[in-house]
Image (cartoon, rainbow, N blue to C red; front, side):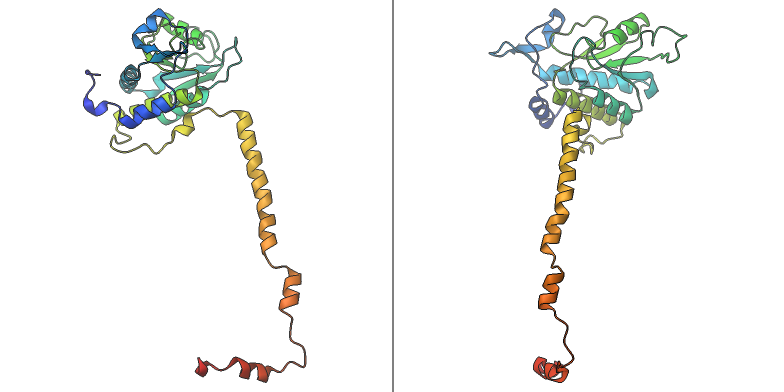
Length: 271
């Protein structure tokens, strides 16, 4: 952290967010290339990532991305793993990252040859590749190495750094950790561009980058519909009905003495 100007250092609140989202929690396996980023192990054998080195690498990645004159030359990738049934927890963050930074994104599936086969319809020539997980995004990383494209990857303790130029050590298995890391990276890039003042908080919440399961969204929508359907019944129960008005607000008959009513109520001079 000594090579970074003090004004660019993370605040205590940023480190608290990283700890709360379990960014520092790795896995039991440890690759030899990731040993430099590991602080230690807990009683359960889980490796603990040094968050200071995470912040340092994230700031380095942000300075590299800002150096790109054209934001469209940066491609963020988050693919589905065909070998596992894990949830695509990084795809929402990648879409938000490309939205706020005007970068390109590849989310879901990657067609082999996208970076190497010029006759392909969706051929791309990126100048920088940013991947959410080098294990799931193996094919884009491999093709980027063929085309001499630098790669920035968010890596867990068991990730291999083959063909990875800049590693951001973090927890890639938690949707909260992944969403926070992409949010911090996006915020740091906007601050370096001068879009977001460094002394002010970014008005975009971290929740916008966190993955939401379709079942959870369906449950929330169903709950909102139930609340809306139940609210009018409560309102109607408290509003007097026609029977109440007929009982207490009967219209005066023909024999009603209006003069006596005026004398009983008094005049304005008596007030």
